Length: 166
Image (cartoon, rainbow, N blue to C red; front, side, top):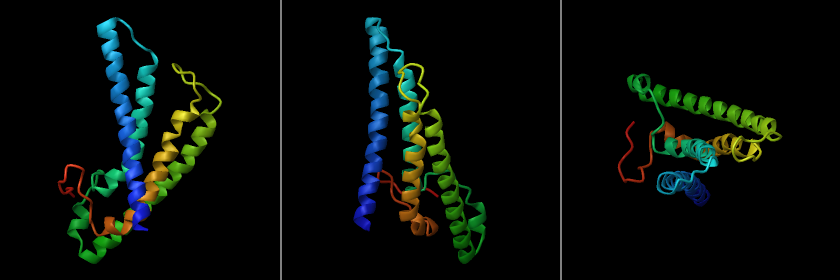
């Protein structure tokens, strides 16, 4: 099971890295083209926006693992350990329910937009809308693997090697 989790985390990181690297590359190329050669592509802004959304949705599960999601820890810190753990399990259940609902609604959103086209690229709107169910599914998978460690507040170190703050 640990190997599967390791592979999923690695694939998730690679997906986020590729999406954000693509944003950098196309925006940089468009800026150089616009100011260096007088040539600009209208589709770059739209594609960059869609890739940034994909990166944000897919990066949420990785942020969870590192303790980098926005959290208010005052109440759990004031509670005895047993009650704090119970509250954190409640938070896990709420996160799971929210993201499962977002996954379901994201699928519906993709179905709704599939027959419509985007403005600049002319592709189906359902394609960029896939960021929602893909990101939510990845978050749910990360949460299933990481829930016990989340409750124990055993967050992973970031890529810089520093310990995550809670």
